[in-house]
Image 1 (cartoon, rainbow, N blue to C red):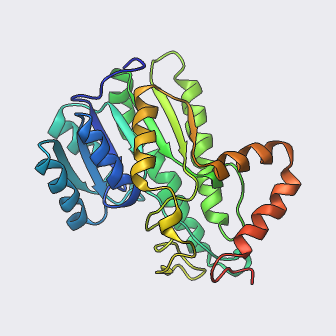
Image 2: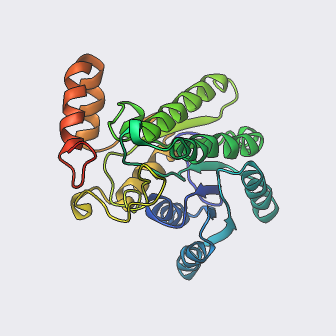
Image 3: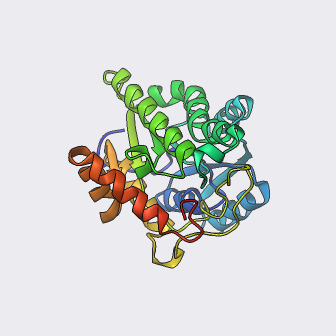
Length: 274
């Protein structure tokens, strides 16, 4: 695929497609004429998303997938090839967050975040990459500003996103001569359920967001940036003014940004630093 290409009839695999950015991506890519394979753990919600897409006369299939399990990721790609014949684009979107001070956190929480956010990306990419290289397609990872700046109370989340970005950066360099495109997308705060499902120090879901979700960038807006990033084969997308400023300032004033990050997180509702 070259820059400024059409997505019509391209096969797109999207993980974490049952809600939030993943669901919005599924609908956005389908509207561009792509054939989408939707993956997530909640099969019922996947079916609802697929139904929405099909009602608009677009093409969607589903595969119940836990990206923390290598066999599930392998089966996802096998099912996609069986259903559509190939894979052009992989959107590694499945992810989970946390809110807890590391000194009080059960290590199983860190492992779970790494298993989903990092290893899920590695597994899915490994089992899709042969088809994607053959098609000169795209691998994308939905990362975070936390992949550029370590955030207090999110040690496992930041670690997983730093790891994801390092993996995708190395993958990009490896494939300079193959024609495969690699995109890293770093949304700022986005309206989704990721904060509601974020894990506490014991590994239980918080069930409530510390932010005013209605004032955040919408998942649909993020999805449009991702679609454009794939079409124009962009390298990195950093979203929101706050996100861009955080990344820029952290390059030149890291100590200042340490204090800023601490102050912002400490003012959140039910902050672990109060």
